[in-house]
Length: 457
Image (tube, rainbow, N blue to C red; front, top):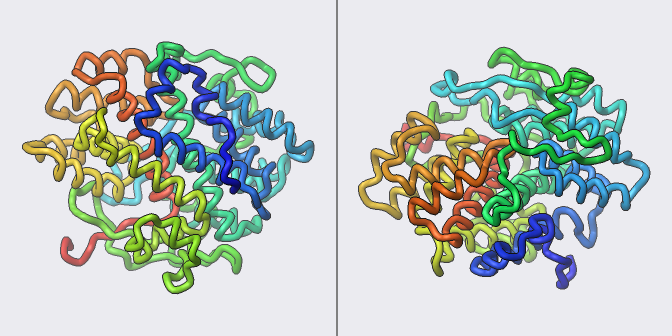
């Protein structure tokens, strides 16, 4: 990736200079969000994960989010890049597959009562229209965007069969998860500026030539069944992922998979530490290149399989890590550390990421005093639980609304945050924190699974 960055895409899509100037307060996050775009959407050397494929997945993902300004942007990039992937077909498939998330079946036995089975993308039907490789990528995008807690090792089998390599698969997952961040920041900025009321139900903007939103097309009933299939029982989640039982999944030579049939999985959300195991193959610690080590930012992360897996795309990992650190640890004004961590914990609880929720529940407690009951209620009862104060309740509600797909974040959420004492810089910190954990949750849920450490069994 070249040293010169193109125009800031988040600022361009938001198109609200009065508020985007606030982003200067988190300059590293702003700069590295753009670097992540460059690394994932327009790398200097896209390799066998082609530029056209990247734009096609981005357009499909934007359509699932029903973010019309981004839809137009990514479809235009796709159309300018190639005639081989028809932008209209990408839009048609995405509209037919659109829905409301997050839903899905929990892996954790104690959370079965919270499972919400729903539609899965029909890759076989889509393959007839866009080819097996892109159809498999769209299937992953549909899962990560709308029902990430349905992820299992078998999620990756369609990609293995379609010829995706591990390096490509990691970049693909990063691209989809990054867009879950980017599009939510854009949405939040526009709502904060008063340029868009923001709620999904209020949106009626058109895209891709026919004036219908992705959500409208999904509910219209004219072909949705051709690209999605309903799953009405918890046991169907594994079958729908395209593989046999976890102990049988092997992947292919270019995309090997590891499963953990004897893992000590958590049964529910917890506030203590958890381990995490990757399904895709991380880079061996001794084989990390200089660029990959540099991308970790913190050298001790070389011991963690999650970061060694993401290091397969070092430019993207470096940009992601620097974005993360600025959003959560830059305390020059804005929201308090405890509230940022609480926003991450609520987002993770809502999306169903048991691992991320454990980390950020713990950090919320470390950064606050007297909040033990509030955090435990969140973990035990869910994101609707009383958070203990007007400000924390407003952060909770904003996190849930912005994490919904399509996003339901609107002017009422901004008013509630401001009435609870948050200034605009603090509201932007809420938006950034929530958006970032929509990136993080999708990677943690999609690439592996948590385990209870021996000391907590």
